[in-house]
Length: 291
Image (cartoon, rainbow, N blue to C red; front, side, top):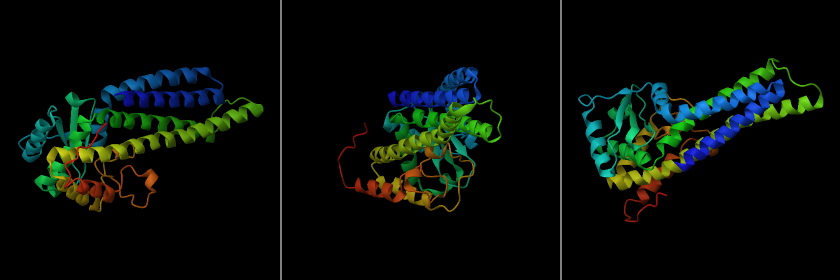
């Protein structure tokens, strides 16, 4: 929870910085006041409603127990084992195999899986995936990763508006050398802010995926199930159509086929590294320190 508030504070500062750049370049302090109020509103929105926003973006729909019996029974059994409430279940109508968890806390959590995932995996592989997502819930990752979706998108939109304003000359910037310096500073801030927050998004995702893999393996006592599922998911040739750049870090595996992207900008650790780590747990009784 502290990390979530820390991240929201960082985003708040970034937004204020962008708002300050707007105000200086356009010579209007009202812009700064508006940025402050709007960033407060966005923090509130991201905390209480970000899960609903993510589910809507993903096109997920509630999964009924009769149709998705295996999904329900697997999730229910693992939730009991993990000692957390049964999360709500959603299904995404997409052939690409993938899954994510979202929500504020364990009492308000949701697990969403694609139809492709349900059709492709065996029961033991499905258990591995669900155990991974329940581990995100138990480890309190879901609020942080869900809040990032809304805040990253907001900063990117705000920066894009600023850049368009400069390109199309809509501002009433101050004259002289000072105005030029402020314009350059504002432009740099608008360009660097989305990069900065995206790097935070990626760093959070990669670290927590390893932890959730280990936690899920300990929950099922069968790391081979998750390792096999990750291999199948990563080898699927198509992309998840409903995925967006802002939501990519939430999925159990990269929903895009960006194999040639530099490692620094990958939303997930390489699958080969994750599988190797899981198989390293196969014959060990060592407990994984989660925090």
